[in-house]
Image 1: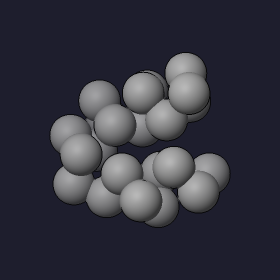
Image 2 (image 1 turned 30 degrees about the horizontal axis):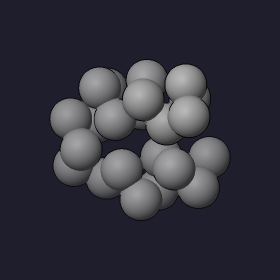
Image 3 (image 1 turned 120 degrees about the vertical axis):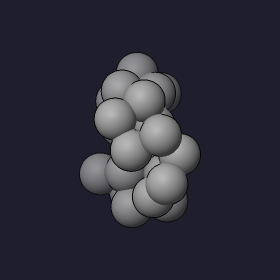
Image 4 (image 1 turned 90 degrees about the horizontal axis):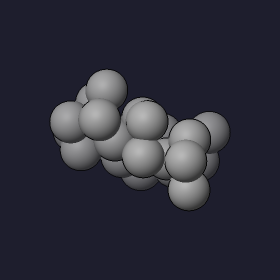
Amino acid sequence: MKRWYICWTTFKCIKFVLCKDI
């Protein structure tokens, strides 16, 4: 979840799906 949160902040929830996959 930490990684997902970091990505979400970086992508601003623009592509949280791709970020979540990573």
